[in-house]
Length: 228
Length: 354
Image (cartoon, rainbow over the protein chains, first blue to last red):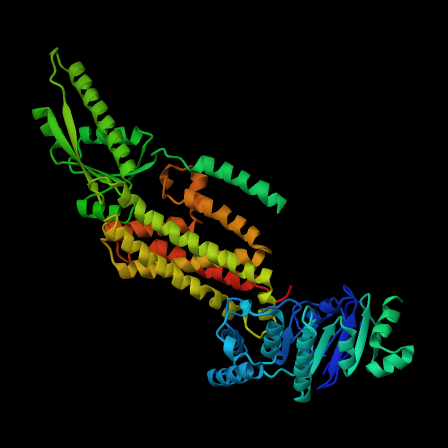
């Protein structure tokens, strides 16, 4: 659970356990910067926040044990195989050998990657890579997982499958913090915040936002806000 | 990047042009005077007056002199036999024992020429002195000769000198470039960010980075030693175990430097540039091609910070002289301290935030 979070240009919000929280904004609105502050790889100049009960200044390493992160850029090792990537990150998160073995077998099976589990990740199509990256981010059963534009450049079918994976993780109690440019994806979120120029201009369920602005879709909500 | 492009070559030009000299100067000269006569002292004074030789020690016995050469404290040894002066006056003839450290065959040849010149001019001086003191017009010329013995490399074989040194270079270059490019490469492709959001601690990360390159470095040493032995027939006098033990510490120094560079740079290009800058200075100031003794004093101080210098010394001492652990202890301790400092810096300069 977040406490209050004030950063970038004073943003303030709270995310509940098991919630899918959509963090929207135009390019350059400060989404990635805000995420980097939350996951402890950038320091905010002022304000405070807690993640899973840990302070983002004092307990960055505790936070890291309890979060998963998937960046905009595919960031697993292209020159390792699917299985090796899982083993490597499992090892870093301190999972036992036995656990890693079980996890990677079930993961590969769920993703339907049995045939390519020994292929280098670099040789796989982007959509598959993103699904692997998401699974790796969930490997250590984090309380919160941060997804920074996870479906950028991915085909509609894979996006659909990806959101099914997100729902499944949320259903199991993982909090999902996701940024996206696709407004249809925003409709899938439990609650959505829209960031404009480093400030949160709207925060509510998609349904309430639509009625608040009296429009049909999240796309229109976004256009209303982003144009100012 | 722009200042780097201009400043680095300028520094290299200024330092290296002064430091990398092929002159053979400041030769470490030691002597054993068994005669202790006025003639023997006059002869030693001749060497002292020469700008090529620095008298570093007067050994009471051969055993001490040999140990000193083994440790690399002295490169040329002159032994003046007992009754040198008396025999010389009676027979007008005498011979001196000269021992030259010939690991660097070219330098040993030059040193031998210097010695011969000094002895010849001493012969002339003796003749003049005697002529002036006597009434005879005809004085038989004096003839002092030297019997040189070239140690560690009897045939002055160039390869014996170069192969261990080049092996040092290869091990250093490969490990420095691999480690220097490594972390920065992960920065470029984005995997470092993924690592930074994991709870991995800094020293675990650096050790994880060091270990594969450490193994590669030792593997290179093994292949290099095999080629040295089988292809170039370089003698391997000393203990292989000692060689590996020292190298295993040495590689940590190089890797520490590489990872430190990697932490400070943003692109592989920058890392490569900086690694090259240090590599060129390290190579030319290592005593591998040009003797450190011939460099100006300030340059000699710089070489104290050159890890390659220590490795070249140790490699030659152990491989060619058969030096033991005690002989290489000073180099070993400096290398160990260097390794500790560089790897601590590597750990501290690795930032999990950006």
